[in-house]
Length: 327
Image (cartoon, rainbow, N blue to C red; front, side, top):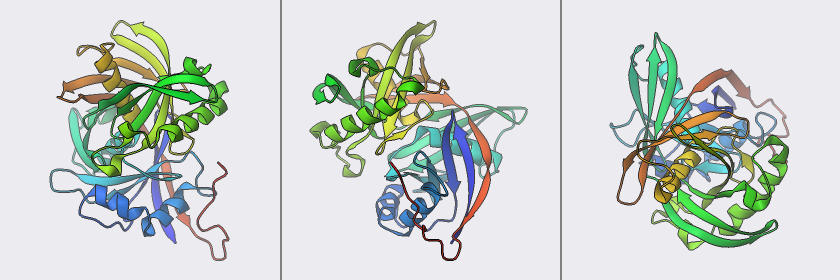
């Protein structure tokens, strides 16, 4: 077994891009379901888990698009399986598509990279000047509030949690509600309570969507309110997703969920932007691009950077072909 990858990071969160992985289905959503128990899942484990990856690795398999309206598709993956959405990955894919020539681009303007993901069709608008990428705008699927104020008893006390869809379902609450701050020193405690809340609400009726493939709580977003800037609200967050992974970035689809919630509460106006920081103090900016009947279309601005390329192979007699996780 031998696989070549291109590794990127968006605001500190890794994204490992892999081409030519066999996947099957008429749409990306179908390919995700089929990949869960197929050959692609073994490749995911091989490239994601130790000793070739780690418990917080993230990546994507490039697939054909659903139709000619998109440039390509992608199956997003993490240590526990395949996710329905990924904003930081979409930003990285925009940079990758332009830098590699996969999508013909304007060196002094904006290039739209259209990508089919399991939750729908998204865009990465890559803005360049003199050939250099200035920033990338991730335009997400419709994001909406599912239910607010859900009471929940946790190991850190009684809390109320909001469920919001941003391409995946997120549970969200202030970190202060569980006696924590979004700082590196609290990472272990944030992971523990994030996992606890995710699994406590995973089967909640409001987390069950009309498309069952999108159902269940993907992650828990805990945030600190940092007040307001001249352009809108300022928050810092950590998203604990899958089963205990920590997003180093402010989380792209999680930021989309925050935009939907702040739009619903009136804390984010149409002419404002959310300044959204991560646990390592990297930053996205986000705005309401469009209001819909059920929610909003969010746009999140960030950037991605190439880390390098690798070729991974399975050595003869290696006793760990499927990798391993210690979390």
